[in-house]
Length: 416
Image (tube, rainbow, N blue to C red):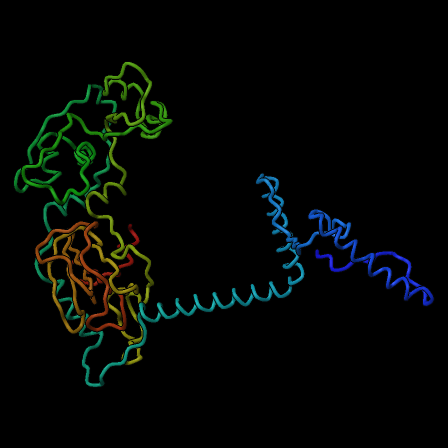
């Protein structure tokens, strides 16, 4: 701070003596001033600073430590909590409004996508002559093309999972090699080597589809019927024997084991055991699968329905699976592509013929990935969903024929 004045406590002169004292005082004062001026380090006998001094507050430096950090965080949380507590009602109202807005936006987006990607009402010109009867006749022409029966299809009607009597098989397992020739079938090869169960060849050679044997392919041929089993963690010989209804001694003898200890991943030959029917049907290509593997909606079933044009009861020759354009379409069953093309009814379509007299049709596609004569299995993408031809929106129209007669697709798809 700055000292701006000070007061000397000296007695004041009276009126009577004022004149004389003032005259004498002035002379005396001059002498004193001269005396003081000679002393550079004294100012009127007082030690007051001669210059203006300024004092400013500075930041207080504190050493960093975790206690300080925790204290700051605690203070911040306390301030926020106090604000929330004072504005709790406003906070909850804002939260509810925000939730309502987000819900409305999500619902609107889903509704818009549903309208875009799913079938709905369709308006046609009044002179359009297409109806369900014409559709059925058109599809039947495709289905009647060619004979689908073969020796292989006859094999599939037989019970190929019959077990062989394990009591007759007490000998070590051994293998020989066979090279597939043109015209060979899995059952024909099994018969050549005295095997009664085709699942023996399937299991030993890890065949995923028996309808696609390749000429020149080498197969391992076991000297007895049975399957290969891969040991899992926790398996014991007694558990495996109980599961497959065979004797522990048979497993030991056939695999020439000297101990009952097993290791994970070890392969055992289970003599006399056949594959279960579901696994065998899949390998044989008889296990139907949905042609759409992504999310979809059943938009129109097989059979009687209300015609989308005439608004009267009519017959629908297949089943419709509504889903976004571009969704992958797969073969429902392994087979050979019979037709691919474009029509005003089906748009882009594919027809696949299978053994057993079956044909399947895939219509309204946006893209076709296969060619006529190509063999496809259930892992092959044959096309993509679209809305071409006689269509009310993006969906797959799926039709099944058995020996030229319409079949409800659900009766075969339920076997999956």
